[in-house]
Length: 149
Image (cartoon, rainbow, N blue to C red; front, side, top):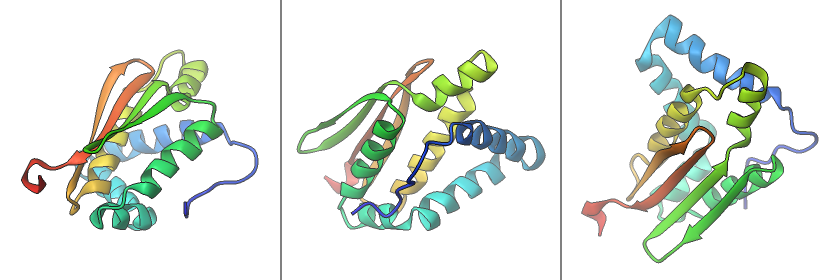
C-alpha cells in the first residue's frame, strides 16, 4: 500500500517551490549538497519505497508513479516485462506547470529526478535510470543491475 498519498487539491506551486529549492541548494551549497539532500529524501522520507526496492518489491514505486501522475493529469504509461518496469512520461505536469509560469521547463527538475531515482535504487538489486526524451518527457527505467542477473 502506498504510504505517501497527498489528499485534497493539488497545490500547483509545489513544483515551482521544488525547483526553486533545487536552485537554492546548487547556488548556495553546490552539487554535493543537492545530491545529499535528494539522497536523504529518497532513502529516509520515501523509506518504504527504498526498502521495497532493496527487498526486490517495486510495487510501491509503481503505485507512487501512478498515483501522482494520474492526480496531476500527466500523460504517461507504465510498461512491465519480466525484467523491466518503464515509466514513459509523454507530458510531465511539473515541467508543463513551470513552463506556464516561467515560459520554459527547467532541466534542473529532470536532473533532480535522476539524482532522486539513483538514490532510491541505491543498495538494491535494481538500477533506476532517467532519460530525457524531450522538453516535457522522459523515460524512467527500473531494471536489475547487470551483476544481479
